Image (cartoon, rainbow, N blue to C red):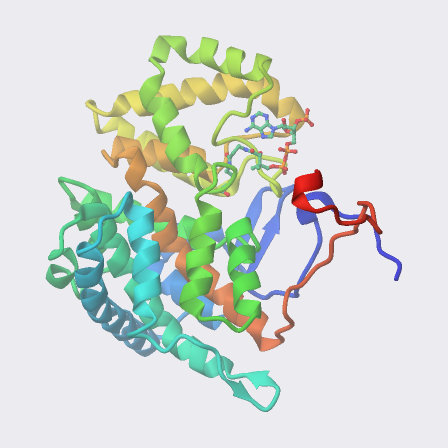
Amino acid sequence: MEFREPIPGLENVPIKYTKITYIDGEKGELYYRGYNIVDLFNNSTYEETAYLLLFGKLPSPHDLEKFKEHMFEGRRTALEVIEEVSRLSTENALDRIKIGLILATKYVDSWPRFRGKQVVVDELLAVAPKILGLVHALTAYAVSLDPNIVEENLEASCAELLCKALVSDCMQKHIHILDKLLIVYADHGLSASAFAATVVASTLSSLLYALEAAISALQGPLHGGALEKVARMLEAIPLEKVEEYVSRKLAQKEKLMGFGHRVYKTYDPRAKLLKRLAAKLALNNNGLREAYLKAIALELHALKTLAAKRVYPNVDFWAATLLLIMGVRPENQLPVFVYSRTAGWLAHIIEYLENNKILRPRAIYRGPLGLKYRPLESR
Ligand code: CMC
């Protein structure tokens, strides 16, 4: 059989048609279900955006109420899971969420079923809001370690639940900012994490296991792990050393965390929106303005070299800055990404399952053949 040459990083290799998210990497534009991210950022809420991603249209007031009820049901289900997770010794918030997802398979029917040759997508869409609520509750617990946080906020908005769990002095302005941040992070096409989730789902495994795989893929520093790295970098470098730091990193051919993107060859539109929010918040926040000033300096110095390569700040750069200004610790930042992106992951998994084919690529063998086995003692 003839093979084409391998394509490193599967760059520009399509695996499906999609109606979920469109990215124009040249113009720096992002659309969810046909709506420009700027429009959604200015006018929508996370709940509406999550509904839009999953169901393909903006909800009516009735749709939205039903959607929220199902999410609240998921939060209630999570209470039992949280009780179990709280008894285990865990290293960090993401481990708690992943363990919670695995334990939740006992409580949520998350395995795809067939009708004829087709996966019953309606059943998956029906359970998706409940799973979303479950992940939100697990995340709220995972970052706060407060077993009562979910019970006390069972019917709070998604941004409010997250804010109460994450921000020590959660105020209305923080809830508003988190709502915007959640909209911006809610989907981004077939990112490495969405792809990992799709691979797992394509074997007809549990949706919860697929989400667990997505989180594992997200944790690497080339993907969402960059968020924590950016936050730690901004904390560690004194403002007056930013230029020196950038020059040293680039001279050593090291990557600057929070810069660059596989698809965007211009400024990431999400980063643009978050940068504006960070500026506004920093102006009203003397104590924590430092992170913003460092981010501005870092961007300025980095772009002197990186703009020529079409490498710009990405969403994680400005999200980390914004979260730092809000007082969110670096280790609690990636859970925010999980909280939001679960909507997009679920939408992609379900869309793929509509026309499922197990994802099973090939590797081209280039090693020897016909070697003779020699027993251990004669080697
Ligand atoms: N710092 C310095 N140089 C960079 C950076 C960076 N952050 N990103 C890309 N480049 C350079 C890279 O060295 C290469 O240069 P050359 O052609 O001279 O070798 C060129 O730009 C292309 O980079 P690449 O790594 O081949 O591009 P890629 O599409 O394989 O990788 C990326 C994309 C996001 C993994 C990469 O830009 C990166 O490692 N960035 C830092 C980590 C990061 O911020 N990740 C978050 C990604 S966006 C949101 C998310 O997924 O969470």
